[in-house]
Structure formats: structure tokens, C-alpha cells
Amino acid sequence: MASPTQVLVQTAPKPSRTTVKALVESDGFKSIPSNYSYATHPNESDASNPNNTIPTIDFSLLTSGDPHQRSKVIQDIDKSCQEWGFFMLVNHGVPESLMKAVLNGCNDFFNLPMEEKLEFATKDIWKPIRFGTGVDIKVEKFFFWRDFIKVFAHPEFNCPSKPQGFSEIVQEYCKRSREVTMELLKAISESLGFEESYIEKAMNLKSGFQLFAANLYPPCPQPELAMGIPAHTDHGLLTLLIENEIGGLQIQHNGTWFHVNPLPNSFLVNTGDHLEILSNGRYKSIMHRAVVNNKSTRISIAAPNGPSLNTVVSPAPELVDNESRPAAYMPMKYKDYIDLQLEGKPCLERVRLPVS
Ligand code: OGA
Ligand code: NI
Image 1 (cartoon, rainbow, N blue to C red):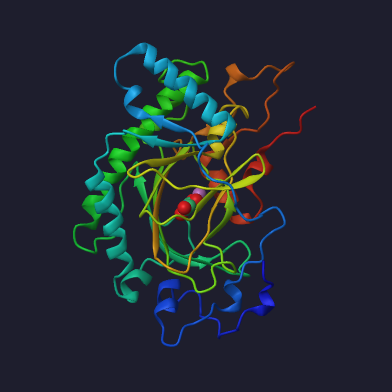
Image 2 (cartoon, rainbow, N blue to C red):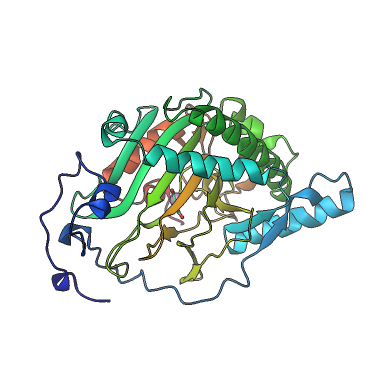
């Protein structure tokens, strides 16, 4: 990895008034400003491995009505969540046309005039509509190669009213992807040894918190120097992600980074911090990141689904045994946990209890 000093330094843009998109489209733009240069952390080596062993789950077998097939898929989900915290979901029933439409809608949103997007620019993570560019609010030291729009989609649905028709498409997409998530969480309740409505009841999913987060990664002339989203885990229970067929997502498995090349029309599903906590560590919240490229604009949409914001999440009591399996995490309200993310360190470390 080249050192940041090799970057040709341009004047740094004011983060609150510009976007990565505007930077890329500006006259004479050739190299990245030094503050976008992300010196890779020692534990963030390059990804090299092929993706051929990433688990795939056929959703239709969960809902086919055949109990034998269902229990087989539940076993596969259990294995995927334990070993990877990640799987590709196929035959999920969400129409390909809707997935394409929502990606196109996000592209149209990012193409709006700057002022219309900056109307939603805020550092306040509790604003139900938030537009941003890649400043890491935790360190304010380097910028990431990403613009984003995040909206709170459940229990109340929010969305910018422009471009025309965007809100309707996002709403339909959020509804359908949430239904898929609820079905997966029934299967995961069973894979943890509970009845299928366990997680729904324990996490108050009827008023569960769903975010819709669309990311734009414009082409970057020096992709090896920049980072789209650095290594992180997601809060919540499960995140469903789709992208416009331009790769960039990488996941960490047994200490190695893997490129993910999604099957067409699949959902990329990853476990979140609150599934790790609820399962008392049986399912680990997976580390992932997004790298950038110098050819095409990538758009991804992440939809994390979590408990209701007022739910206090702790390891399921049935999975705790003071002798053999003590609680590995302390209880915390989901909302307070999200607030903790502002303070820097990975939050899971803050709630993890010392094992005696
Ligand atoms: C996220 C995320 C990855 C991607 O938005 O939390 O991990 O591929 N995105 O864009
Ligand atoms: Ni993520």
C-alpha cells in the first residue's frame, strides 16, 4: 500500500458543503485530496480470496411448506451465521424490477442539485432523513469515498419527496425487504432453539427500527488509497444489502478479507451486533467494509433491521448458564447503543463482559 505522502495534494474541500460526487465531477480533477487517503490499518490487509465458499441460502425452501426442507435450511442458516455471519439469499420473492427501480431511484436522488441534497445534511444521527458525505464523524481526520442518504423507514416511514416517485419506491422496497427479514428471523429463532416468534416478541419487532441507507461510491482515480466504508459491524439484528452489480463489499472471515461477488438479484445478508448479543455470542456480528474502484459508480443499499429503539437487549436468558455459559454482554437499550457509536470505539467492546 502506497503511503499517503505520495498523494498529490489538492485543496481540501469543506466537508459540509461538498460531496464526493461533486469533487469527482469538478474541473481538472485527477487525484484525491490527501485527507481522503486512508492508511490501511494493520489488521485491514487486502482481500485476495475468491468468493466461492460464501454460503447461499434458498429462501423459497423456508416457505415452501415442506417441514423437512425447512429444517434443513434452518440448519444451513445456523451454520452460516455461526461460521460467517453472512450469506447470499436467493429466491426471496422480492421482484427484480423493484430492486432495479430502487437502485435507479437512489441514483436519481444523488443526481439532484447539490442544494436539494444539502437540505438534509446534518451531523445529528437522530434526524429521520440524513444526507452526508464521507466524513468520519468519530475522527474527523480523513474522509471516506462515499456520499449517503439514510432514512428511518420503520416504525414510521420517512423519505425525501424528491425526485418524483422516489418515496413510493423506497417505501415498497423497505416493506418487502422487511418482510423477508422477519421471515429470516423466524428461522433464526428456531435455529437458536426457540419457537419461531421468539425474536419478534423479545425484540418488539412490530415496532422494530429499520433504516434505509443508500451509499454512492463515485469512481476514484486512486482506489488503493481511498476507502468507501472502513471495517465495521452493523448494529441491529440483520442487514439486507443490494448493489448495482459493481463489486466493492468485502467481509472478514477467520481473519481474512473476502471479496463478495453477489449472485444476480440476491440479497447479501449479514448478522448485526444485536444478534450477537441476543444469541450470547453464538452468532458473531460480521466485520465488513466497502472498497472503491476507478471505473464505475457503485451504489449499494443497506437496510439494517433491529429491535424497537426502547428494547433493552441482553443475551436470551435461555442461552445463559452461569456455570457453563455466562452472559457475555451487558444489557443495553438499543437507542443508547446507537448513541454509543458516536463515541468512537467499536460498541460491542463496550457491552462485552469479561469472561471469568
Ligand atoms: C453499510 C455497509 C457496504 C457496502 O452501509 O453499513 O456496510 O457494500 N455498506 O456498501
Ligand atoms: Ni455495514
